[in-house]
Amino acid sequence: MSSSSRQRLKSCSLGDVIVESTERARSSPENNLRVYGVDRAVGLTPDPKYSSADLSRYKILRPQFFAYNPMRLNIGSIAYCSEKHSVGLVSPDYVVFGCQPGKLDPMFASYLINGPEWRKWTTAAGVGSVRVRIYFRELARMPVTLPPIAEQKAIAAVLRALDDKIELNRRMNATLEAMARALFQSWFVDFDPVRAKLDGRKPVGLDAATAALFPATFQDSKAGHIPHGWSAQRLPDAIEVNPRRTLKGGTIAPYLDMKNLPTQGHSAEEVIDREFSSGTKFQNGDTLLARITPCLENGKTGYVDFLEDGQVGWGSTEYIVLAPKPPLPPQFGYLLARSDALRSHAIRNMTGTSGRQRVPSECFNSLFLAVPTPAVARRFDELTAPLMSKIKANSNQSRTLATLRDTLLPKLLSGEVPLNEN
Image 1 (cartoon, helix red, strand yellow):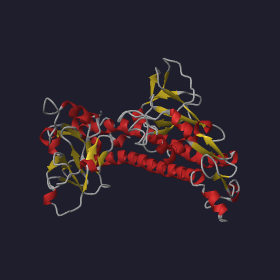
Image 2 (cartoon, rainbow, N blue to C red; image 1 turned 30 degrees about the vertical axis):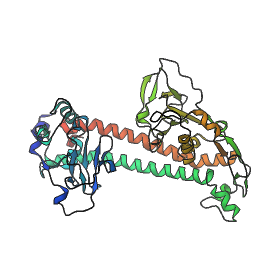
Image 3 (cartoon, rainbow, N blue to C red; image 1 turned 90 degrees about the vertical axis):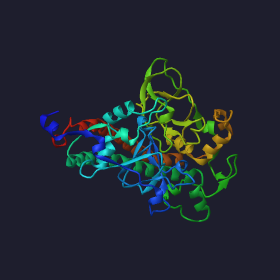
Image 4 (spheres, helix red, strand yellow; image 1 turned 30 degrees about the horizontal axis):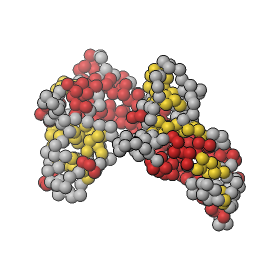
């Protein structure tokens, strides 16, 4: 760090730049406020479990303020109430604090609480031999080193720009996946193009060449009424369940833990290299479906697109792997796994004692699918593969941006990388 950087920084106690808020619901004219809780993984969350029949003692939480449970701050459970949140309430046991104007910028502070010095101090601090408690008076003693307020705002703006792009990518991916799922539902569940032609209408949203691929009548089958010319097949006949993949014991290979299998979207949260011992093996194009409770009910499902060509990865033994057979494209398996029909079938067929239930792979033998003609399958691939590729590109970019943010964060907070030298 240069001498000029050191001169810009000011050492003080956190209590010199923050102020505790004890404003309670009973003293507020605002009614029907949302009750928030703090979740370490997602931050501020309006989960009903945090509410109570009597809210009179609950504390008011306003935008640009922070809230935390004194017994969980040491494990990183603290949340910033940003401008996107409305005024709300938090448990009377929580600590609520704000920043002193002109001394600590709230957005800068929201990054400060994710920095290494904060984590180091909160992990080591606390009161009580059984459960660590860090109340405001303890937190106020934390030593901090801060740049001038103008530089705080500039640093926060840089980091916020990265977070905004990550959030934009997340929303874009949600839209792209919704488009793919809507097309899957329309073509292979509701059979909208066929119903339209049966009624003498032009299929909505389809060009003439695509519409011509669909028949105008239905036929009876073991899968119910399906488009004429399509086939009703047991799921394992159309999609390979737990296909054989080869990975030698002791090989270092990409590993995906169950906790990192997404509940929404298809992109895995974190993949690490790990020595293979035993577990489910998979490759690009496979779909991973959690077979155990409550992971299945929570929606844990992923699409494997993070490996090198021909590479085999591995993960939890509690994954079911789905690999579509031709003419079905790979993403058909993922979109099917997200469908209500497959998920409800899997949940109905869970076996085992309460709390330890899992889906037997054999249950899919009784699930029949309407398998389209090769021409329809090819057209579906042409329309949805670009969506999946764009989702992958956005996810890769977001991971790169998150790495950049996490690398810059401690350097900017400490002054090691002065903003005016970037």
